[in-house]
Image (cartoon, rainbow, N blue to C red; front, side, top):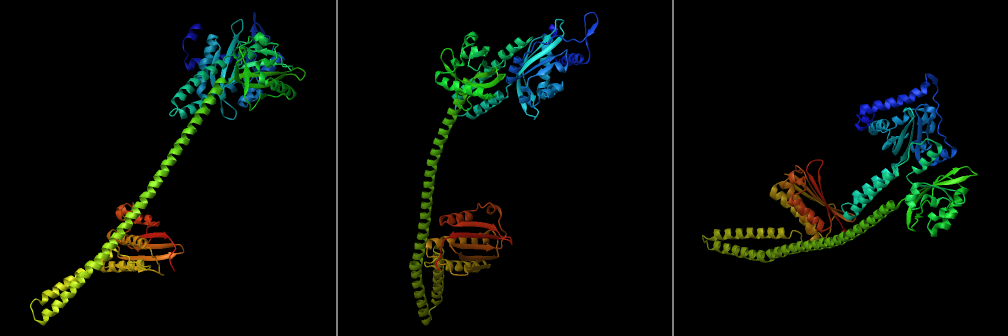
Length: 590
């Protein structure tokens, strides 16, 4: 057997050993055991003297304590009531089904349990490991188990005793700590290292808490192991506040030797400033005893022998009878947990400050950008207005200057033509030709002036310009171009009217150039507080760059609309072609 213990077991070997161990249990439950020289008798070895105070204590311990006599059958198995709080199964349900515990082991942990349990059977060493168990409602509970198998003098398996601590909260806390660590690692590198170190310390604390005593043979030994195996400091206090029992963890946590605590008032473990309050709370607990945490919602502190204070978490459990009531207190040093919580609070506070500072900086930058955009828009509008005014000035110069000069030349040419005709001079035809050419130059000058200043001053200038645009398109391109206005739309702002005209002009140009339209309709109207300008054509509709609205003409129309605070919408016409709609919020004159 020693050789097998030293050699790693395969999963098949481990399962075979576990089945052999189970057969011992089922054989003991189904047939008598032969003892001595062939004499057959039921092997009822005297059970350990499990006293009432042991049961009371074990049933208050926040852990699953179990004991199985392999030669007595299921009737001699025991599991503490904590099994129902931890997994949702009652004691009877758990004991009535001999293999329920194996079915509830998490599938990913069963093979490892087989190996470790078989190793325990072969070597006789205690089994100390962590397993996942599936509760009645399907959620997973983590247990740290400490199990030992005790044999008879003949070497036959006698009973198995174990204790399992629910460490699910610690596992969840561990996961939350890791999540917080990941969240802050990019911003606070130094804090990350501290949290990693804290996590290491927490792991060490969990391992320390997982230790427990095993191999209980009698009631006093079982009582001692249950108390000594608890991962927290545990004391029993009487009604008068005297410490009646303390485990070894109390020595570690508080620095006292056990004998120094027994018979002393429990207030020696409480800082001076809290003792009066603690005395009242103790009496209130004995007046209404129940399982509960002490000082819920408040920070509790313990006092070590050396006078130092540290944060603690205390759970209270009443034990005994009404006439002999005692309180079992479970005390946990949460110094490391508090430090980690404080570090997280500080880190979150620092992060919030940084976010606020960055938000303020972005707000200032955004305000500056808005101001720059407003200024840029103002400058662009000024440049556009200056450009339009300069075009108007040039148009006026062409009309009033060059146009007048050409008109004078045309008049003189006509006079010269008549004089030459009267003299029957052969140069009369040349004079007539000069007059025609000058008149053509006059017409071209007028058209050029109109192109530079299409909208005349006056409230009806926009309507006149759009009507002239429609007529000009029909004359030049030989297509149908209509201008419709149901009622006068009077706009005195020459710059505003010019922008609307240019939008219509660009839309008509796109319809002819890109849409290959044969019919165009320009409509100008107003509705309450807005002016509507629409250009509808029967062309091929959106194609290429027009589909993505990337053309220079469309960008120009959008730009002009934005300059006057209008909304430009370009849509496909369901009947074919394109509809351009410019909506300008403003109140027009009646």
